[in-house]
Image (cartoon, rainbow, N blue to C red):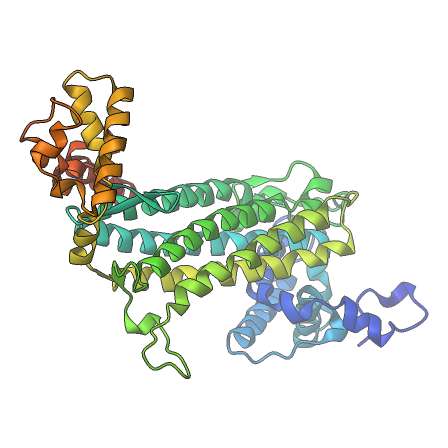
Length: 458
């Protein structure tokens, strides 16, 4: 059978052109969405008396037959038929005869492919939201079990102040909550229907675009046919959200890599999520978080690729836009894989509370509390800051920590020091004292966990 668009041409397509321009190698991922869109389109055509009910039923039976073959991996796609739309239409005509050619009435591959991508991205966005919630559930589990587990908090990768481990992991809970909010909000724009915009200008057939949109579960119809076939904002938005999310995944992965090193020794990743060395038998490598961190550039690249692709395109459809799919597919696969691994890795992670406690007792991260102690007793904070700076220097020179100094040594720097300074410097007190809203104080962390549960399970 000749090409479905070949009537105007006098020569067959050069084989190199066929191979170079064909997209069936990757857009076959849209096969089921393509059939779903076609089923809605043919229902609408019959409803509008553009085709007969008998023709509609024939086409629907044929599409369901092809759908079954696709689901059973029993279809051979042809490069000569270019893309998933032409392949399915060719299969349909072979299955039910010339009436299959009526399916394409009132539409174009331009609105057809846009519809397929809207359907695909809606399905994948909803699936990714569920995967994000699995990660949040794992983070929440670790938080609930470690409210009073204390570790050093860092700024500039230098020990700053002791904090609750639960407070630390909940920071990532809220990052993923914002990612989830962005994904949910993006569904408003994914749920626009381009079907019926045809090639670029609409169609002379008396179609009902709202009907086909309703059948496909879309909330709106694109009001402009040029925009409908050329819009890829919804993909750009997804790639942007994915880039932000993989940044959060990468930051968390970096912490897991640091924490699981012998230098930190704060957590132990389950053996299922680590690998060994081919020559160093003692090694336990955190390959999964390392690879999660490494995938970041891939997703950034897909976003930049589509931005670059679209920046100079005139309206409406251009063949350049065939390049919009592989980056989208790759980002979906990469993000789904990352989230699917991250949740069980976090869930099974052992938190070494003893090692963390040892760390906070062997540093100067409680220094700020001495300044606060003096400020409460009337010394201006800036002056108190200078005093404690001198005390820390003295302790470093003596090779001791702040809890090791005697009261007499403290009183060399200020007569305001009393015996209660040791209670104030205890890591548990330092953490508990930060009870302002959103702080690391244990009471506030419990409040935060309650709020997180409300967001996750509402």
